[in-house]
Length: 254
Picture (cartoon, rainbow, N blue to C red):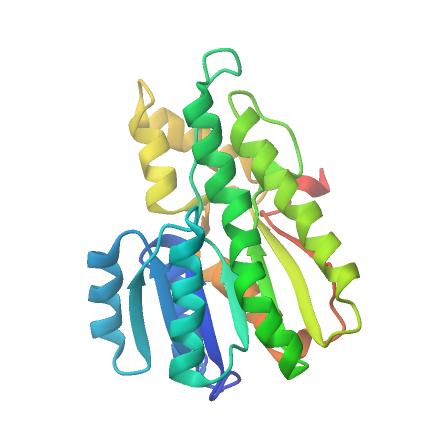
């Protein structure tokens, strides 16, 4: 793991940072010298990770669908640091359901978590970045936001919307000094993927199928995706504005 301290002193918020890609991102950021606020509904696991990583990490309970909770996180970050340098909109909800049996509540849950949540965080965090004249927002979309899959209408719609939201924000605030970019992970070994394979009649067969989806012949790791998020958080990506980076082992290159 790098110890380059490329994010030394940076104040960062990571939503959904208690597990999977979010937790790997928190670890990478801390390793690079950042201070991190984990905003997560799973406050128990978030606080456990914060204690493990030390004083540079704090955790707050936050349902990204609820504006009052999002606003409270932004205010706490500003009170603690006086600025916010990096926002990672990673919190997400998945759903594998045919379009015609998806309920309104299920649809709203996925769209509100995966699309409204990032908008709410931008609404309450980005103005502070604009006032400072700098900042980086990284939205975590998905391969499902780029190509179609069965049983994925709600999730794919939300993740596809997040990609266009990223581009819209990038153009609207192109001259503000704030950057907006997006990563699209492919099949990644995370608790979310584990939950999906648990639902399948043959879990081992489902895992083999997922490995086959990736042209490289294996699933990706959360740490590999965190490396891409780190790139957009760092000054190496200062010319990237509205970029969409596929982190999918070659899937969309086919």
